Length: 346
Image 1 (tube, helix red, strand yellow):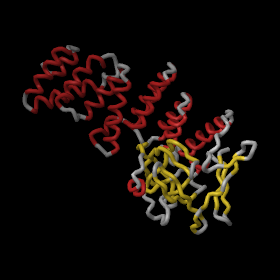
Image 2 (cartoon, rainbow, N blue to C red):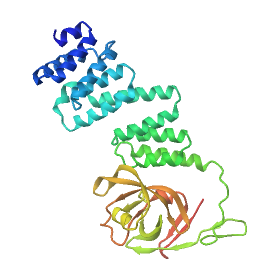
Image 3 (cartoon, helix red, strand yellow):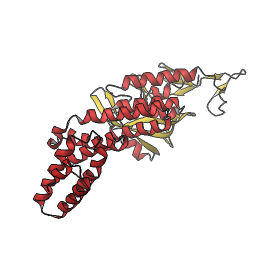
């Protein structure tokens, strides 16, 4: 009997044997069996037969691992069986193929929609169970599978803030700090939590014998830090990890940016934190995010700060821009007449 007859009779054991035989036979028989299975499964993988069809589809993929229509049917069957994580991975791979204009996937529906609906369904399940660690892991995975979609990093940061993982949350937000759709929301969420942190009483700052002076009542006095004038801007010596480099102060920049060449030449230790889109005078550009061990002026260091790295060779005399992601931690003012910076922690 033909494979299609066995399938309609729901004789899956014999259908499996015939498919195995077809794998070892001539190409025409194999292609005929493949087509019969795909046609039968297409209208049934979303229903009660999904569990029975999964082993047959797996046999098909053993013979042809790159068979996109078969992969899509397997994901749909997994979805019917509640295997959401497995289905998500396949939907992501197929969606990326479709984005490359793979005509073979055109008849099989909106893969972007399938991916997003499956992801949201799984997220809802985890939130209802209050499985926050699993939720964090899934959002991190969604960010890897779909790195251009800022909503995954935004939701990840909200969950990390909920779990009091403040530095991890900021790193997630910095992935989308300049995202066309999610950048403003990311910056607002970070400001919201910075305000909440500021409202919590903090221990008094410890005196710094080298770079800070204190009045008798313990109040820190801002000491002048020399700057170098460059037109209407100022350059300061910035310590990035173990290197000291000239940076132009840019209070209009939300994110500190280091020249990628200077980052490599200075042998600064860093960790990759993904990519983000950043608005520049020339438009939106894709930049790399890196986390450095520390960054600061003199002894006023911030640990584990995430900054951007890109080509800054167009900026003569400086290795990058010092932005508000560092300066917001301090009370500061610039004495333009004397070319001095005054800086202290609040």
